[in-house]
Image 1 (cartoon, helix red, strand yellow):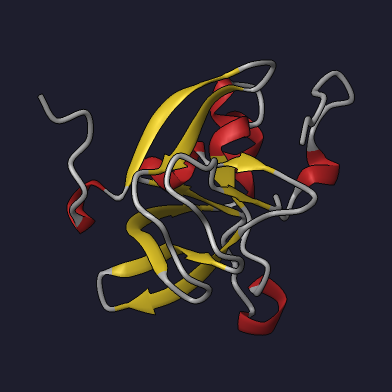
Image 2 (image 1 turned 60 degrees about the vertical axis):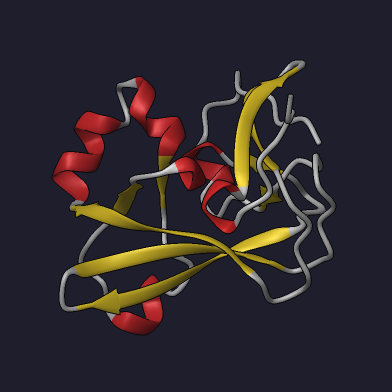
Length: 139
């Protein structure tokens, strides 16, 4: 019996990580610059953010690092896909890259270090200072 299928369509998997909850792991190896996954997003404004900030969704939405360069009126984005469950690290092995298409904003997770199969994929959260003090970030 095959334990894993090594094809690009199954490049990531989710498993429980002690003290973190769920995490996303590489099912195959990635080189620096490889796009691990891409997903569509839904953007929302400041009024909607105030509502979302009072829910568990707060921990899963993204703030674009390039907002100020684009003059973006949107406060945050929900990413549809496994990217939304990638954990924070102060020493990440991946980053979020944003693209704007006619269909809306898309987020990609891109390797910034070599990532081995079965290694957790991590990125640095852009809005970490907005989290309440009771949330502890573990590397």
